[in-house]
Image 1: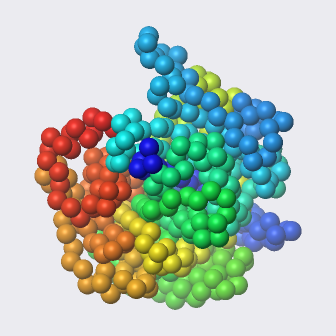
Image 2 (image 1 turned 90 degrees about the vertical axis):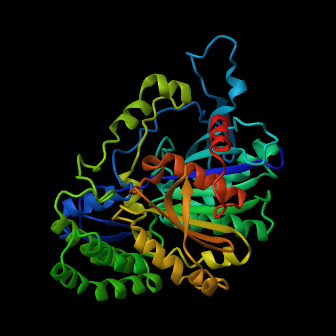
Length: 468
């Protein structure tokens, strides 16, 4: 069992209200109030575009009793009333749980755990942990507003505490290889959390977590570089004209300066940089019209440009909530409260902590669908190439290779040592949704250390899919 790979899929769904307002600092609770002059419609589009926005959760009940001690996990097998006779729920290894965060007033973190369906001796097998975080998103909740986090330190400490409790509860998985993945605003959460795990290991805090790698899909990681790439990408894709390009680029010097001030001054400077820099993106959208900023090949339909209402309806069905054991808690895909609290985090550079991880041999995969605008492949490629580490020059000079799946080129890959960048063809912001087979093969090869390897035979690949 020690050779199994554990993949942690951190679901990053933090959010805000779509109203704009002036900046107020009240007992370190920095937020926007109505009347700041930032267009509400622009704010809403930007917030939603990075998976950020809806109703606050109702923390009225769950299967976690009020007397559960902080630091404790309450977990149970998922309930499947329609299972065929002879199939036991426990045999599936599917469970849901709540973790009562220890350094909070009353926060509970919800997670799902799926044991591998393959032979447990298979080193390629994956066990999946899905975590609803930060507190106030998904099915995670608190009855006390003081538990809402305001920065990456708070978010990452909560996740680290959860992992310590999870591995205490599931000691059989302690020695397994461990990977962290996420997309979109996870471009912030994932590198910050990977650094937190690595630091905890070095300091010998609690249980050693066998961190092997982390992956970011169409993420926002280095705003200074990625915001500058907006106009280049939009011009290359024919979204804007040369005159628009020149006009919108005049905003960037102010954006760049504001981001630098955010890195040194923090708080109000970070909100200013958010407001200034997002004028560039909103200007592109104004020219583009009804474009889907997740996938520029499509029109925007609905408030999210995609209709994900069926997902929320499903998760909020009473039968589903009963199966998960969450009581009357409503699933919150994006929280306005969380977004407001994390507003000063948006424009911070999360690339800074990555080189230390690479130097210690921890793998990083950055992948991006080629038709996404909001976190486009060009901006992601640029920050990956600009990142300073001992292998930078070798990575920059390495040749691009076709990424072949099912006998066809599914993307373009560049890799050296622990660092890999993959531009995925025929995909927008949600690569796994647009290209599921290519995404699965990407993840499988990356975990095995064979991302640049020649594709397996068709029969071998089909056999692997059947086992997943």
